Length: 296
Image (cartoon, rainbow, N blue to C red):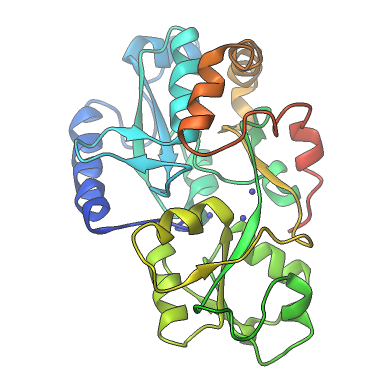
């Protein structure tokens, strides 16, 4: 679960893609008022989205959760599922807006986008501000450490028991919430702007480890052999995410959940999760109500 720029994985090609995404969004939405989507006659988000042909989605450009392609289109596990479910609802496509995790819920409630599908993991404070769909993914947390993990950091308990350790986290991220819940003081936290910055902090010895979802760290490791990824942390809370909607869009949320449940029974759902490295069986039986009990 654990906001990218909780974990924005911006590689050299990703930076160019980010610019393309923002430019594409601006041109594609030029007719949409800056205060929110073009209003439908009855103010219903489903009617609005069908009429304009797309739903605006906040993402973080953090593979495998979200990804901006070189042509400016949006993919990744969560956007791919969102797009497929929206098409079942009569909405042709989605348009991505890259934004830091800490800005996602405020921007949603200010009508700057219509939905969040970014690996924004469920926890009590967030669930009080937005309505989450049922989970799409369930995730684990790991540390990125220097090669050989010289300080043996393999658990949250190892951090709480050693006040000399410095842990890199993304502001507003689920991981920052994990450390706060564990009462790790701010003096032990190194705030970084994105996934690459977190890795660089570890490699430059400004942080002893970087806390991030396991799959995000493994994605970064594909292009950088200068660090290692620990096994999933056994003492980190179980995390998961789904699409997040404004509480005022309750009818859309209910309709989306209905279509999502049906879509989960298709092979296409499993294909999307497998493509991005997630196990589709892990989410079976996990509910938003359960994940929303996570403190943080």
